[in-house]
Amino acid sequence: MSTPPALPPENADPMVWALARQVWIDHMPDRDGFCVICKEWSPCGPRESAGIAIALGAQVSWDADAFGQQ
Ligand SMILES: [Zn+2]
Image 1 (cartoon, rainbow, N blue to C red):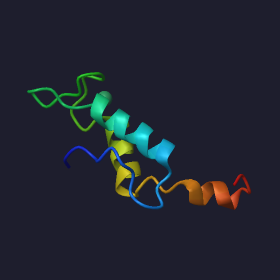
Image 2: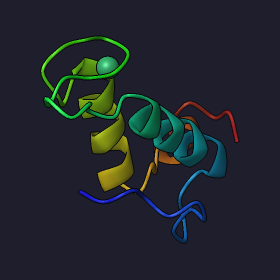
Image 3: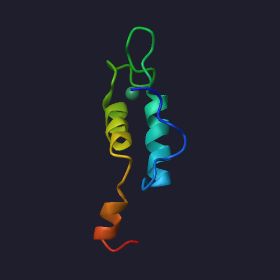
Image 4: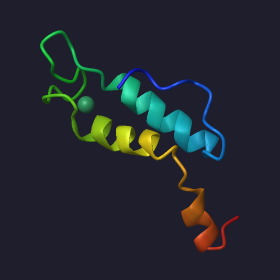
């Protein structure tokens, strides 16, 4: 996966998108394939989670709606 665009896709939560994108970038693998922060084999836990959020378009506002926090 290449670096996600800075601009969130339509319908994405901008804050969640920005956070997930930043975590994804921060936890990039080094030349040997290990996360530069966790020193775990990449993708590390945080990067994997961020990747999932990005892949879903960070559309967690659905959950907020369900709990009436809109
Ligand atoms: Zn990491």
